[in-house]
Length: 145
Image: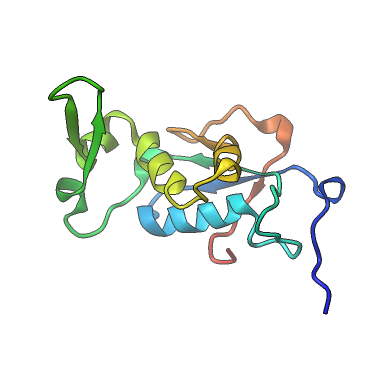
C-alpha cells in the first residue's frame, strides 16, 4: 500500500471567501480552520502546507448562541503584577469583532510552526469589502467543508 504525499510544486495558491453574516462562531471557526489546513482537498497531507488562503468578511455579524455573549470571557496578561485583563465576548464583538473570529480559528489550528504559517494566510474584515481582488478568491460553501 502506498501513500500519496503532496509535493510543493503540485500545490497552487488558492484563496477563498467566507461571508460570516448570521453564522455561529464555533461552527464557522471549525469549518474555516479545516479549509485553511486544506483538509477538503483530495491531496491533503497532515504535515504539508497546502497554501490555502482564507478571507472572512462581515465579522461583526457573527452570532454566539446561548448566554455566551456575557459568560464567555477573553483574558490576557500584560506582563505586569496584577495585569490580568478580562473582557466579555459582547465587548469584544463591539470593539474588535475580527479578534473574536481570529482567536477561535487560531485555537483550532495545529500548535506548531505549520499552524503559525497557516495563521498568516487568514484575513478577517469588518464589512463586506476586502482588498484581495487580485488573488481572485472563490466563494467557499461551508456545507461542503
